[in-house]
Image (tube, rainbow, N blue to C red; front, side, top):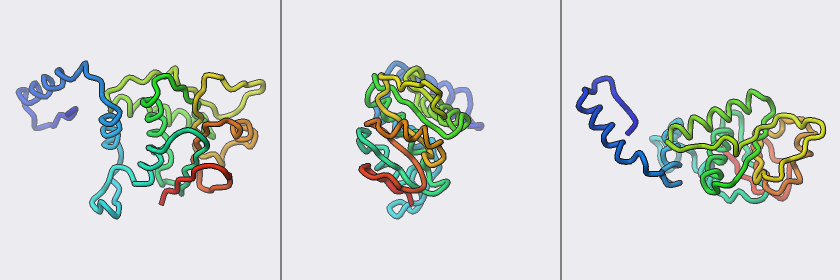
Length: 193
């Protein structure tokens, strides 16, 4: 446990720290890490779990789905698209320690928010996140060439991107999008309700 409560005494705090110390050098498995990340979300009521679940079934399906090919997560504003996309990015990074991601957002601020969420999740899960494996883009600069080392492109709120950015990214084989409408064909669509 990483929690300390205000009614703890020095004995209980020392006990927790000593317990943590034995696991300090043990790397978390992917399953433990994703489980820990579930605790870093709001509780959502579901049909199966009326008292709340950390992520919706649709979010879990999207995160667990293969990341090869084109995928689209659709949902209304506030439905959890960016939450699921952030965890999908972390899942890809944990699955393949050599993978490199390009995260595309409509604004620089949106990119910073996702970057900060990734860092926060990695810190919460007690894993090291090599930030050099991530690149962020909000516009396509003149003469920009997509680095050949990029394995996946994750794009948040694709409808809000400039048309030239989406056109530039569309031919890429591993493209994961979030948005509120589905207009593209030949991709896996995951709706959030």
